[in-house]
Image (spheres, rainbow, N blue to C red):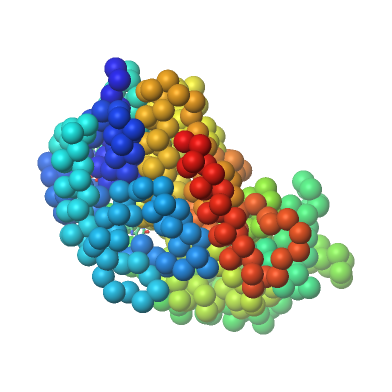
Amino acid sequence: TDAITVIGGGLAGCEAAWQAARRGVSVTLHEMKPAKFSPAHSLPGLAELVCSNSLRGESLENAVGLLKQELRRAGSLFMAAADATRVPAGGALAVDRELFSAAITEKIDSHPLITVVRGEVAALPLDGTVVVASGPLTSDPLAVALQRLTGEYLYFYDAIAPIVTADSLEMDKIFAASRYGKGDGDDYLNCPLDQEQYDRFVAELLAADKVPAREFEKVVHFEGCMPIEELASRGHDTLRFGPMKPVGLVDPRTGREHHAVVQLRAENRERTLFNLVGFQTKLTWPEQRRIFPLIPGLGRAEFARLGSMHRNTFINAPRLLEPTFLLKGEPRIFFAGQITGVEGYVESAASGFLAGINAARLVRGEALTLPPPETALGALVHHITNTDARHFQPMNVNYGLFPDLPGRVKKKERRARLAERAMMALDDWLGNL
Ligand code: FAD
């Protein structure tokens, strides 16, 4: 058929449907609301912001500010609706949630090439081009169908450890070593703690404010994926026998092991980002910002993202998806939104934008397209589909994902230069589309 089926009328699904329809392709958009609501949704309209009404910072100092600017330039429905329904919020772009949803619903409902079908989808269409955009709270029957399609690579919970930028680490306090010298010597960076530092760290963890679990999120924590504060509460030395185990990590400067160690593992091939291994947490963000810098080497750490644990349906994108968001081995099924492992409202809409364009191109017999990696959109897509599949966890857009600038650039100017390069690359790409 020459039509596209989009499953899920959320942020990604609406953007995908809109972009495909703009390119002259007819779309059937399935949304289960209002017949059925996920535990986090409550408005009957499309494109519901389930929690905060903020689309985060506007400044190009933040990669999410750049991503929004790129989407505006590229003619995104999500951004047009956001700009039309914004409410004052200082340096952030916040919107009126009901007006935002109503604006998008009206645009989608009135588009002559888009048919909205209200009702739950329980199985994937057997033929035709499909965009799966059913979100982090995909309903159970569809999740079962997706599990059949993706095997063990569909997850229902994320456990995100904080990520720091490489250039904010105090390297004089850190040593490179793998446990028992296995693997490449410098696979891991290690932040050593003496007993006093460890004792203080554990005490702070125990006293810290935690985010309460929402009713539908009360999942039994499985071993190997426990929040660090939960481990700390089981006994003073539990962390030293778990994620902070010092055994087998010899400090080349002293030839000795430390009392405890926090390991950092590269998050991307460029080694610009490192995650704190095993440090998934439900501490509030201010508490994470206060407590993690107590770890030697992280005193001035810049957090590309903070830790969290959520109910979240997502697939192992680096294993399953082409960079175009097309499913490997099933080149008619695209994925879009949070289910691809992007994290956040703007990121979800952005992935819907790309999936929508490519779904239309597939139907029209045109070559699929990829945004340049220098753009925020391209950097995000590149990360999601190229990062190490063994440790895949959802990711926000951030400047650590961008390819380096050539030559030496002052740190202060770096972001402005990255943003400038991105907008030029974006214009080139859009011009060719
Ligand atoms: P959604 O916007 O959830 O859209 C999916 C749509 O598919 C929904 O409308 C759903 O009803 C529908 N659907 C599901 N299953 C079916 C089916 N079987 N058949 C038909 N329709 C179906 N990000 C932020 O940036 N800021 C936040 O504050 C924030 N808070 C969040 C809070 C919660 C509780 C959750 C779960 C996520 C939050 N996120 C937040 C992450 C993410 O940005 C949002 O979930 C975002 O809405 C994801 O967009 P999406 O299009 O992938 O999914």
